[in-house]
Amino acid sequence: MTTAGEVHRAAAGGPWWWARRRAAALDVGLAVASAVECAVEGVPFAHKAGLPVWVGVLFGALTGSTLVLRRQWPIAVVLISVAVTPAQMGVLLTVVGLYSLAASEVPRRIIGALAGMSFLGTLIVSVVRVQQDSAAHADTFQVANWVVPFLAITTALGVTAPPLLLGLYVGARRRLMDSLQERNESLERELGLLAERAEERAEWARGEERTRIAREMHDVVAHRVSLMVVHAAALQAVARKDPEKAVKNAALVGDMGRQALTELREMLGVLRAGEPVPRRADRMPLEAVGVAAAAAASRAEAEAGVGPWLTELEDLVGQSRAAGMVVEVSVEGESPGYAAAVEQTAYRVVQEALTNVHKHAAGAKTYVRLAHRGAEVAMQVENEPPPEPDAAASAGLPSGGNGLVGMKERVAVLGGVFVSGPTDAGGFRVSAVLPAAS
Image (tube, rainbow, N blue to C red; front, side):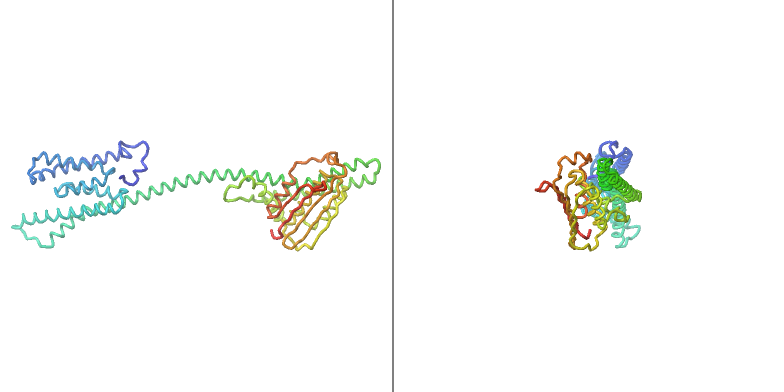
């Protein structure tokens, strides 16, 4: 059994069970003092027991020297002190042994039992010694009856109580210091983990912001630029044959460019506003980064009061019609007024779907359907097969493959449903349903 704090010894310590050389020197010094005391007290013990003096001295020296074991085996030291109490020796052994026992990690019931044994043994020996002294000096003075128990109890308490209480206090303080040290080490480990987590979150935030900017650039620029390319191709085709139509197409290209610049300015204004990146308490999985980026974009547009609305849907379709696309629009029900994020997401879905028609099915007839259903709004963009299968390749419009992914992420972040795929007739269909309260 070791004292509190000894379990956390430094690697480079003292010999054997001592944590430091200073502790070893202290215990050896106490053991020498106890051995000298017991050796001196062994002389009268040898006379009373009828033994040679050297036997009493040797017995006392060996008994007192056991104090060197007080840190490693405090129970054994206290038991030895109790055993030699009848021989009227080992006061230092008893005091230091009780202190070491009380300051150790020994269970409290064992400490109480051994302290009680030591107190009882000291009490009995004190009673005997006081009575013997009283009898020896009976001719000189008379001792009252209450003096003997009073002196015996006082002596027993004086020998056992102070070291016991001091040991309990030192042990409790030592355990408190150990617990504080462990808590400090635990906090340092937690701070290290938090620092690592902060670095991971910072890296994730940078990636999220890059994804957000890329998606906004795609949504804002792709549609306008696609229409500009279509009009530019038409302008090139009719420039010599029909100058009036060429001028009209050139004006449309200019309008498209100005609208693209306006939307770019609005988006850059949102980015400069320093919209905080949303963060979660735990580490976000990689597959959720795109969804979170879409949420950041939608919230940024909504809170800044910029971005497209469903009321601008006719203008959007009109731009595609002006580029030569045949578009039929049907609207069911009346809009109850949706949240900004819902309207902007619905607009972006239709916009990106029309852009894909320009890229992959130029000249195909397209149907845009919008349905207001009270609790939700549904939209569908479906195109027929293109009249010329190679029209998309001849238009020269690049495709990065991110349009459908961006639409799906925008819809998913609002709790909606997104479905896209080819139709049986050879065309393509994009459908989305958004909850009204998002």
